[in-house]
Image 1 (cartoon, rainbow, N blue to C red):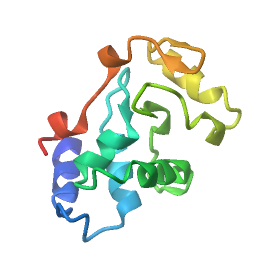
Image 2: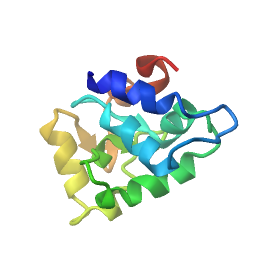
Image 3: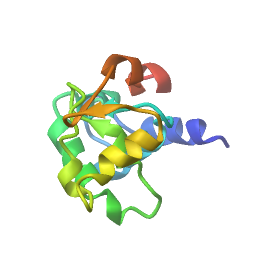
Amino acid sequence: MTSKKQANEKLKTVNPSGKRDENFFELVFEVARQIPKGKVTSYGAIAECLGTKSSARMVGWAMNGCHHAKLKVPAHRVVNRDGMLTGKFHFSPPEKMEQLLKKEGIKVKDDQIIDFKKHFWNPVDNLGF
C-alpha cells in the first residue's frame, strides 16, 4: 500500500467532531509525513485536515513532541499561517529548522519563508479531505 493510501486510511478514522479512533498526535504526525520535500504547511492546515479546524495550537504541541515518534516526522516543514518559523526553538540548535528548509530549496529570511504561497502544501487539497 502506498504511503498516501496508508495516510488516507488512518485519517478516515477522524470524525468532524474531532473524535478519533487513534491518538491525535499520531494523526498529526501522519499528515506531516505526507508533506513533500520543498513544501511546507501550517499548523492550522493540518488541524483543518483532521476535522479540528480550531486546534492549530494542539498541532503545534504535537509537532513539539514529535521527536518521540517511532517514525521520523519532518517537523521543519510545519510553520505558522504566515510562513514564520515559530517552531524553531524546539530544534537543537534553533537554526536547524532553517537549515533543513534551505536544503530543500526553501529560502528563509528573518525566520520567514520567502514566497510562502508558492511553497505551501495544503493537506486538505492533497489528501482529499
